[in-house]
Amino acid sequence: MTSTGRIRIGAAVLVAVVVLGTLGFVILEHAGFLEALYMVVITISTVGFREVVPLSETGRVLTIALIIVGVGTLFFTATAVLEMAVESISERRRAQMEQKTGRLTGHTIICGWGRVGKGVWEIHQERKVPCAVIERERSAADRAREAGALVVEGDATHDETLELVGVRKARALVAAVNSDSDNLVIVLSARALHSDLIVVARASDMEAEHKLLLAGADRAVSPQSVGARRLASLVIQPELADFIDLIASQGPVEYRVQRVPVHDGCGIAGRSLKDAAIRERSGAMVLAVEHAETGELLFNPDPDLVLMPGDVLVGVGVPGQLERLVDACAR
Image (cartoon, rainbow, N blue to C red; front, side, top):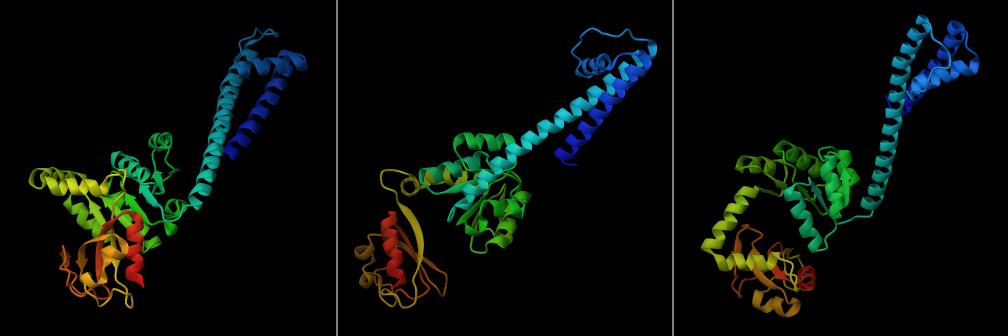
């Protein structure tokens, strides 16, 4: 039953209690109408004023019944009113979120506001990448709002919640809730709603990583395994770790790594890396080339390597340089 229905029932019962109680005092205690109504009101409201009519034993029984039924009904109705007010605030907040998320496009959806989800959001803020957060727990959702995140309070495993944050217009989704099973459902739902969506999921272990990949995630990451690999790289290959930090960090110059496919008919297709003059034309540097036929990834490719349609260049540079690289590979 809705809160509005409970309010109607409570109000009807309360009116009936007042009417019957007033009639009871008039009939049983021979009180005047105003005195009887006054007795009913001070009894139900529990204000504790003195009685204006001496009560017989029957009158005291009536008063006890009024206290039990009347006060209970009053609390029932007040609770329903409070619940309706909370629902109204939630609906207003939800409508505001729908309006804001409706304007998003090419954004990232972050499911879960834990340590991982918050960290992902902070990096998006640093890079000025639009994103929206889905959080089921109200306390966590409030913390996310306090941090400045655009939050939709709901269950990310439900399609309607994903639709609410514009999953069909989003660029990527991060499933970062604490449950592997929930992340699995989120991945399946997101992939069904948007087949081209970039989906990255958090996993608790290697087995969960494998299942999430089977479910349709583009990447599945275990924070523990990533932390272990990071620590090992700092010891074994500190220079490589420093290079990755330079690319990943937000500094005065924002470097990015991007995969760029070579389209058929573009100016660099059929030409060697040296002849394509990618560095001169775009300013971006090609770190690797992924062969279209074999899928082999060649790092530090030979300048004489001939680029074919379908090959993928892995380039590094600032956003403007990468945009020029995309243009060079497209026409």
